[in-house]
Length: 365
Image (cartoon, rainbow, N blue to C red):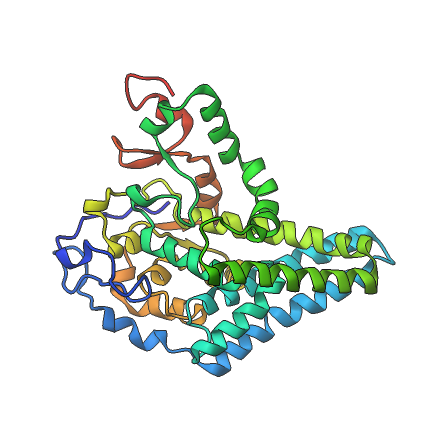
């Protein structure tokens, strides 16, 4: 990972959560000597969706995903190895479709708020997610990312070294199992796409409850119709590999965007929205083809500073604003190695492996 200076800016305005939610964060208004001067208004021009670009995004995500799904169905008559081969680009286009869904949840993909909601609801059927509930949970993630006192809202469960040591042996085993790559990226897609979104929380507000139940009913009808048309076995043979590949890739992308060695974690009193974006959200520099399939989400630092910027404007916003040129930068290899990191060490101010946690103090992990 490219290491850059990580100063703590002395800007009181950024040490509070934005009153109007994560879409309109307060950001440093002037430099601290090492960070370039910046005003949040600098990003406003990038936060204007362009209908033509948005339609192009749809035509290069949803359309090829559906076309490749049909091709997989037809390939069943030839060879299942061919089906699995086609599942690779199909999974990539499903990830790209999810990014459009994600932009709709921020109201950044289309000029109209209502249009974003309608498109997001429809795309939710393709990505197996209830739009309103997912939008709510994801907003919590943006408002609390990097806040040690507000963990657990739409993020990857992360314990401090001290919290891990305080667990019972059974609790440690459960945490190790959860953070195991085989479980996280193998079973994770099933939990994240098929099981979790189907469950209505007991304390869910009526609107969230209707979102989950309505999506479940619509999905049930859609899946039943497809199974009636092509048969349940063929449906599973086509959908399963695509969902598993896309789900694993999506979980990895979400993981490395905030789980890297010099990540940002602070107690609530010291937490800053701007710092969580600029120091706690990585710039994952991917090869061009992977950046295309991931919908530029690797430019996560830009997205967290202003979530109203549509994915197709993230690269330009990064390139044209000096404030983004000193953020934590990860290569593809760095992202793969970051999976080893499991715990936040408050002593080192870093994410560490289980082995490193054993040497961070007198107690053993």
